[in-house]
Amino acid sequence: MSTYTEEVGKKLNSLLEKTYDAEKGFKKAAENVEHAALKSYFNEKAQERYNFGHELKSELVSFNQDIDKGGSLTGQAHRAWMDVKSLFSADDEESMLEEAIRGEKSAIEEYQDVLNETTLPTSTKSLLASQKNTIEYGLSNIKKLEDLR
Image (cartoon, rainbow, N blue to C red; front, side, top):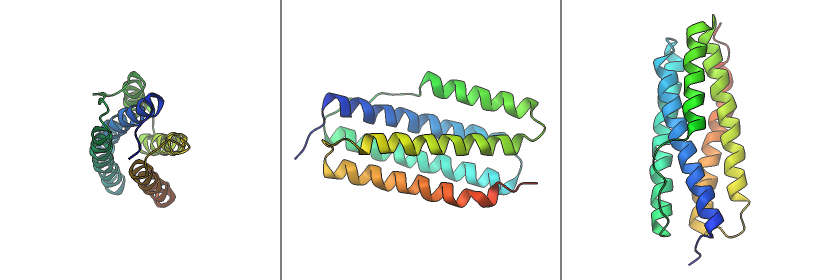
């Protein structure tokens, strides 16, 4: 059975931290929009990230890695920015959606960075690929929500 290098453990914990941030961000976005389909989308994405977090934690624990708890300062700043945008933007729902799209694209890049590690155990590589594919699929289906006007 493969084990994690220290660097892979750090990258996975960073990914877990960003997953927590995304969950909180999607919850915050759902609170800040009134459009029913968009609210539903944000709530679904928050639940998805909650599930991703538990899957990542289980995978880390199975390889005896310490789990970093909580969200990052970057994530807190991003959620604060979303709050500011919702207060001052005339088209706040579209702004929230644009921020979500930007975050999803960033998440895909982060997943790919970890997937590029050659030392990943098969179970970890499979889990990360599945989560990345879910994010990509969701991003490809978001086009229908972009036409909020």
